[in-house]
Length: 100
View 1 (cartoon, rainbow, N blue to C red):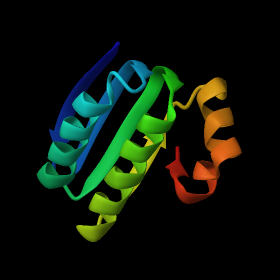
View 2: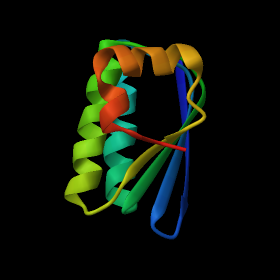
View 3: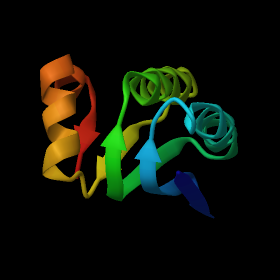
């Protein structure tokens, strides 16, 4: 199960993801990510409470990154847990994402 909340301040939309970004949550994430990219130039994903990410979640991140960059913005992830970072590193996503 995934919970997504967002806060928009100026040109930054911060999304907080809590739970698991798996195939079941991918559609919800896709909608939330598309809205986030349209609401603000820059997007920050607070993934400090994201326990798991599947390949479907990685696809959503890749699409979000493309949408944000197309709008001239940046995508930043913060609070990445070790097990999620391990997935990013194994899949090459760590090299294409920005972290704080």
